[in-house]
Image (cartoon, rainbow, N blue to C red):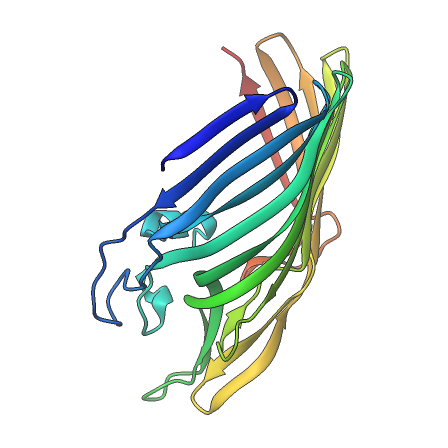
Length: 288
């Protein structure tokens, strides 16, 4: 990644080019068979609009990365080698280009933020998939989860924020994704158009902590593949509302309780694996 760095006044420029070569099989039905690019941009331009308080930035990047078995299970712990459903499970994600513009900074010493929006174009990207196994030899039909790859383009926007004082902490991330250009790819589900995770916590004298949090996502549109073709389908949206409470018995020991999914919704973060009903978790915390 050769690059040129220039700093003057409020400007900071890092202008680079990424050269990347993947070692791959020539067989289309082999693992890691997608051909990547050779050259990708690697550029960051930053301007301190308000010195020590707010910066405006422009980023351009891209590249390829291996979707290893480990990385796939980090995103979905239910993944096994059968998730390929007749096709290679592991392949490269090839992002031809990614461009983002935004601004980040702080207000005083207690509130920080990062707002950005951009565009991404992928030659190959991993998506959740669902197929209908129609049964054989008397077996009952069954829906099966999977992972499949397809080219796509994406418009995105995100917002990160954090407010922290002696008694209050509020933070969160909000994400908008508009994925298009999937073409004739069937059986895939795009990510939710809008999702997020926000939390608020209040503490009294660092002894009693009470918090509320919510992870949410809108419905995900897609389709299901079966022997006769495909059918449109939707994974419902959800809001996982939680409440937490902690009491510090001493400086090194505390008791805590958390209630999850208090709206009693069907939370389906991964296709066909649903968390149903209200949940409670209790525990102890040691600080050494």
